Length: 187
Image (cartoon, rainbow, N blue to C red; front, side, top):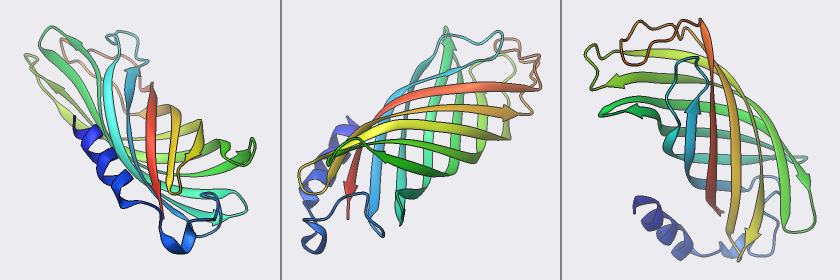
């Protein structure tokens, strides 16, 4: 519901007159994005994955390179009413590869801080972690100022050990994966 409203607002903004005929991947183009999809922890005793969403900003630096900053909210899984949740704040650099005039693949490397918490367990906990990740996906232009795409991220997080009775984790580092559809408004 929130994502649909945001996409509607971004689509209503329409193309910027100064950039209407330019490629979204040209130098000094800016993207504001909304993403929604699934996320899952790769920890040994992790539950099945669940929903996640996020927002981002991308600045095309030139030579098909972009810098992005994102914020998200991922429910990594649930057991009954208990939930394992992460709020990642990340930044990355990505190289975009042309697949024609209106579509590009990308591959990026990034770093982030993640607030990890458990909710409705008998011993709720919350802590900050850091992680590095690989991002890949594709975007295609729609209309004069829009992009739709898919984003896959594989993050390795540090300091993940937990003795939480519902979501225990014996590992010092764990992976988190996400697959999200995205819409970006380009200006």
